[in-house]
Image (tube, rainbow, N blue to C red):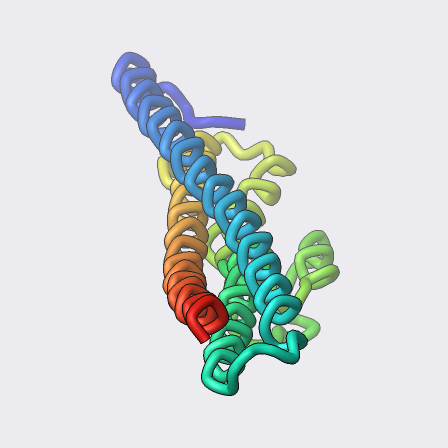
Length: 218
């Protein structure tokens, strides 16, 4: 499977080298974005631990304590509320952030689409697998899933008349570009939610400090 080299073999090889260079660049960017995603997950875990610890200490030391003045208990409740928000956002960033709807991919004619539900006669028998096992949410974008389906489809074709856009190497580039965009988007989503979680934890810490002042100087 591949392009016919008719008189311009050197140009085709040069083009393949350029495509491979772009693939390598995209793979390196994927590593960078995946590192940001991993760091975001680690930060979310730390925020989760800190929020739960702060809320637990505040409740144990002030709300339950009979000697805490009413104003101190009010700030302690504010600590609990802000801590709960920070905890929720940290869990969201760690496990849910970055997910998006994942429609089924199917082949219509000579292309893959992801809109609506195809009729029985609209997809090829060999592409039935594309319709199965589609979860409602996924970290993979539709662009990535379409690129992967097209590459899988080309693996079973032995056609000497492939156009440059059908060249497997170009399909691989499209796959990595889509994956690069996915990882970048996931990292940004996680970092945004973590920023909100950090703000909530900061507010909880300020409320906790105020609560401690009421307890010490009552």
